[in-house]
Length: 83
Image (cartoon, rainbow, N blue to C red; front, top):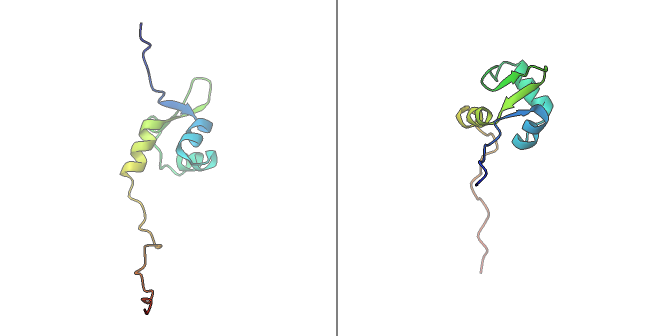
C-alpha cells in the first residue's frame, strides 16, 4: 500500500516564519496591520494558537503590488579600454 502524501497547509507562526523567510514579528505585524485576513491567511485554533495558511500566504505575495525598486540597474558607463 502506497502512503498518501497530504501537504501541510496550516502551520504555527514559527514554522510559517521559517518557511517564508519572514520573522514571526513581521507575520504578526501583517496581521495587526490588517494586511492578512483572518480565516483566509490566518486563524485561531481551539487552543488559542495562531495558524497561518501557507498556500494563501504564497498567493498574497504573488498577487501583491510591490513598490517599484529605487535601486534599479544603472547603465554601464565604464570607458572602453584603449588598445
